[in-house]
Length: 443
Image (tube, rainbow, N blue to C red):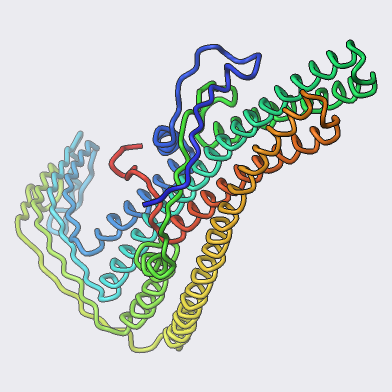
C-alpha cells in the first residue's frame, strides 16, 4: 500500500541554543503512555468512574438483610425503702444491687420492587461512568497526538528555515564577492544582507514557536514545562480510510454515542422505578433475646428470658396524593427527551464524520499537488542559484525562487500535518483511537 511519509530525525537541542545537550528521546507511543500514566484529567475521570461503581455496590446492599448483635449490661447500687400491703412496717435495704445483662440478635429483611430497578439503574450509571472516563482518555490521546505531531511539524519547519537561511548566507557570500570584484553594486550586497536578516528573524521566531509547542505537549503529559526531550518520528498517513466503515465503527465504539444510549436506558429504568412503588412490599424481622435480671430489692429476685421473636409486615401504597402519577408523567417526558437527544447525536456524529472525512480527502488531494509543486520549486531554486552564481540572474530572481521554495515546502509539510490531524479526529469519532486500558492500573 502506497504511503506518503516524511521522516523527521531532528534533535532540537542540537539546533536551538540554550537547551540541555543530553535529553531523553521521545517517540509517539511513549508520549501516549506518559500521558495516560500522568495526565490528571485521566486520573480524575477514572476515579469518578470508580466512585460510581462504588455507589452501585452500596446500592446492592438494599437487597441484603441486616443483622445486628447487641449486649447491654446495667448495674445499680442504691439504698431502698419498701412498704408492702401486708406489712405496714417499712423495709430498709442499704446498698441494694440490681444487675441486668441482655444479649440480642436482630435480623431485618425488607424487599421493595423499586429497589431492584434502582439497582439496575445504578448499574447503568456505573457503565456511563466508565464510558465517560474512556471519553476523557480518548480525548486526551487525541490531544496528545495532535500536539505531538504539531511539534514534529514545527521542528520540520525549523529545518526548512535553516535551509533557507543557509541559501541566504550563500547568496550573501556570492553578492559580497561580486561586489568586491566590481561585478555587482553594493545595493545587491545590502539587499542580500537584508534578506539574510529577515530569514534569521524567521528562524528565531520559529524557535519560540517550538518552545511553546513543547510546553503545550508537556502540559498534556503532566510533566514540567521545561522538560527536555528529543523528538524522532515518522508521520505515516493511512491510505484507505472508508467513510462507511468509520460510521459503522462509530455506532459500535463511539463512547459519547454509547453514553447517550445508556442515558436513554437510565430514563426508562427511572420510569420503571417509579411505577414499581405501586407494588406491594414486605419486611421480615427476627430476633433472639437472652436477658437476665438480678435484684436485691423488689418482688423478683431474678428474672431470665431466653427466646426468639419473628414477624412480617406486608404493605402496599394505596394513595399518595397523585404524586406517583405525576412522577410517572415526568419520567415519560424525560424518556422521550432522551430519545430525541439520541437521534440528535446520531445526526451530529454523522455530520462530524462527514466534515472531517471531507477535510481528510481534500488534504490528500492537496498533498499530491503540493508534492509536485515542491519538486518544481526545488528545481527552480537550484537553477536560480546556479544562474545567480554565474551572474546571469539578478538577486530578485533568486530571492523569488528562494521564497517560492520556502512557501512550497511549508505548504507540503502543512498539508501532511492536516491529513494526520483529520485522521486523528476520524479515529476519535469512530472510537478506534489507540490507547492502552488504564483500568488495569490502580490510582
